[in-house]
Image (tube, rainbow, N blue to C red; front, side):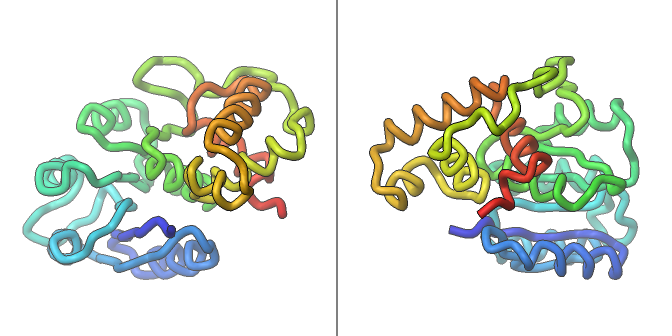
Length: 214
């Protein structure tokens, strides 16, 4: 099952670039794009999507932008996962958006792989703040985790499929194993890597190359 996306940004060139990059991934499907808040809110009302990737500063449209727009979206679509993709990279803003219920805040200076990690992580039910967990105040990934080469072949396979967007049940079905076996192998891999949260697992997988390995 693909993760269904809506993209919103007031810069057409950036929006086109994002669509081009995300369309390459078999786990993602872009259902629509918006250049202003009017179009975005209209899309949200008529399109069932899983994750919204939106700019923070997006002038134009009667719904405004920033906290006002995001608050409106959270009221009308409380279950929607939201990734804010912005040039405004500061902890104060990130903390405020996290309190609002935004699932991820990502700077536009980051590589596209980080955005892909964020999308997969929030879809899986985690929050994703790549530099620091601003809610708990500590780094998400432990320092000096065990290299991913320490994982068994089966653990690597489970992690690769999991970060590609498959659920534990779907992986079990595809690999002809029990759900308990897959859960155990995922937990074992995370323990070896020194990772306790799914959001950090997604980030580690993309940064280490596990996610793109065959």
